[in-house]
Amino acid sequence: FIDNEWWRIDAPVELGGTAIPPSIRWAIAEMVLGSNPSIHIYASGTAFAHVAYVYGTEEQKKIAKLMVDKQWGATMMLTEPDAGSDVGAGRSKAIKQADGTWHITGTKRFITSGDSDLTENIIHFVLARPEGAVAGTKGLDLYMIPKFMFDFNTGELGKRNGVYVTKIEDKMGLNVSATCEMNLGEKEPAVGYLLGEVHDGIAQMFKVIEYARMMVGTKAIATLSAGYQQALAYAKTRVQGPDLIKAKDKNSPRVEIIKHPDVRRSLMVQKSYSEGMRALVLYTASIQDAYALAVAEGADPEKIEDYHLVNDLLLPIVKGYGSEKSYTLLGTESLQTFGGSGFTTDWPLEQYVRDAKIDTLYEGTTAIQGLDFFFRKIVRDRGRSITILGKEIAKFAATGGA
Image (cartoon, rainbow, N blue to C red; front, side, top):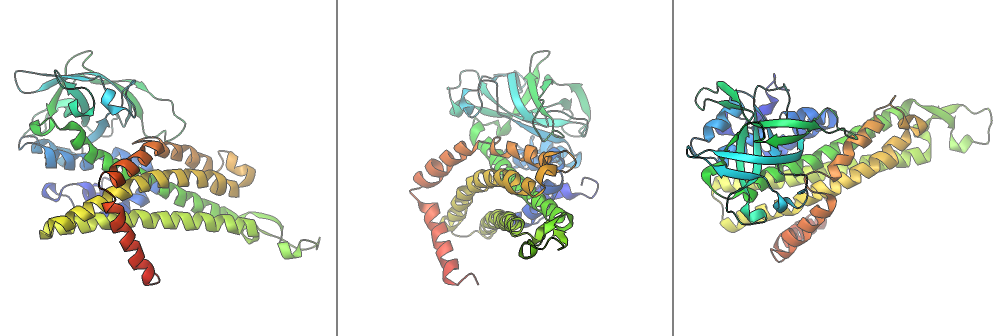
């Protein structure tokens, strides 16, 4: 993945990334996430570099360039032991130093890819509250904290920074991806840089969260697709029982289970939902295409805002519906196709089920997605985005799907 430079699809064009539309990028991501999601997760440093490049100061843009050039890893640190879905309850503190840097202290929990030896350095994107800031999410800032300090011009690594793993979670699934508890500033100062030198952390972090939610939904749907393909292959070779129309004939030959009506029903359900939800991902990505094109062409601001709002409306559907439906069908249909064998580790379905459960939980539980969908995406804009989407659906229906 790295050697063939697939990582370039997430990097800013200005930093050597590949100029391709989001729809192509997410189609590629689905294939990677469906085969080995942890590979995609560990290689997400270039996506974070994009955030550093867009929001960073001119000096901080050098960090973004180094992240791309040197393939550094990245994490997003929001969750704390007492601040899960309630992000605004976070207690991590930031104290400004005379040299313009910040020292961050606190404990972060459930940090994906918190540490590894896959990359020489990791840039942690950390939410923390500066001294004197207001309570809640509005008082949080976003800081970039490197695992190793480094020279901004050459990227040469210096001393170890004060951010360390204190625990690796023993999880139900997705075990290749290390989920860590991280301590900042206990042994030595955790030196960080305030992103953009502005106090707008939650808005900046939401750009990362939006990407993560799209990724999680795509991962879930890709896992269902992989589960369906495994079930289909098994059903074509597993011989059990006679054809239903010859069931009374004791001498009738045994047939592959794909010839049994209920197995065919199950396979069609899996196929329909995996392909339908793939279409949902790609449709959402096509809205991102249209938004990017409209911005590049200097289109009417209202048109640009329409694309932005529709994309925002679709994200909790991709993440929330995609993860819930995929997890349910992997267990009730894909694994079920294998019968008792599906419950064993001889076949990959039990792992797919375990790996997929996290998708309904991290980056906002399904209930959080529902609240976001209704209050932020429908009520707040007085139904503007859902009206636009409804008109598009009506227009498509009027053509008969042509």
